[in-house]
Amino acid sequence: MEKVEIIVGDITTLKVDAIINAANSSLMGGGGVDGAIHNRGGPAILQACKEIRKESYPQGLPVGKAVITQGGELLATYVIHTVGPIYSNDPKPEAHLKNCYENCLELAKKNKITSIAFPGISTGVYGFPKESAATIALTTINSFLKNSPGSVEKVVLCAFSKKDQEILQRAQNKL
Ligand code: AR6
Image (cartoon, rainbow, N blue to C red):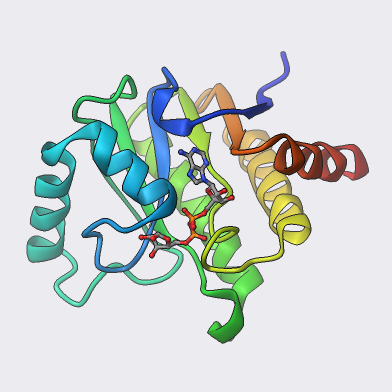
């Protein structure tokens, strides 16, 4: 069975167990996919993020880490929030982006989530080059799936444009 699916769409409309949010360390929302998730998911997500900040991350969620909340009014049951590297001023953007994918997948496994969808973390305002981000995403996901059989069954890579889908597809063909 093919476990990794590359699609074009709005991640907030997907019916999977969990969607990933490309958040910032404040976890208080923002623009891009973060804004879209909070808009469509409603205030319960922000409330849950506030509690996580208060209880676990008063200084903010570090780059590469991930936390989970309910999905509010989304079709997805959960949202996993991660903070991608800001490409231009991160000392190790590649390693940190890999951490994002790994930590989201580990958190999914821990919560018995079987289907999950990722946006292109850091490839918007955080400026990560899309080609190398696609390769990091695919290699990290593939090695997780290989090393954790029987956990996550389906991973969707949700591009926001046909052009971005083609970048992901080309990266997959090169693996
Ligand atoms: N569905 C799928 N993908 C989307 C959607 C959507 N609804 N909306 C945007 N994208 P970005 P970052 C794509 O900027 O680079 C926020 O303000 C978009 O085309 O959302 O990690 C946060 O609060 C791009 O390919 O996230 C942070 O401050 C990808 O999602 C900061 O932006 C990521 O773009 C995070 O920046």
